[in-house]
Length: 108
Length: 114
Image (tube, rainbow over the protein chains, first blue to last red):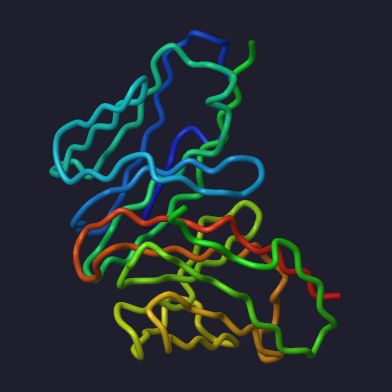
């Protein structure tokens, strides 16, 4: 069993839809990161959170430490949100364990 | 502009040759990391460094070597001992080591071994 499980693996949405990507992990963590990878390969950090909820623009990330689960939500999705979204729990010593990613495609 | 750079973007090498991938940052970050990404798989940690002149093996260090002689630079050498070196290599850095911190990624180098 992988230490990090993301679902769904692939997601296609229409512009304007509300999107949820889920992440479950089995390791003890000091924080959890959500990353965005664009088709060219570049990766951008979206959130780092260790409890509760964070919001940045149309993106919201939540985490439940007891249940070892995090979600990334995108409100009013747009074609420019099309990318791979990666969940990465951080264990001690600043080491990240990466999920395989969720490929999101938002159609106009 | 502050940031993290990797060069080259694409690299082709013949089997059996060593190759060095460059990673430079001007963010004044203490920690630096090298990751490998293969199709359909999550990123995997090759090596990381929390301070100058010190580095630790990650999960897949065999066939790779690194150095950290300067704070700004963390080059990765892919040696001929690496059995399957064709992959996308990403370098990252974070301000501090040993605690939760945002990692900033370079644009990556796509290595193809012919």
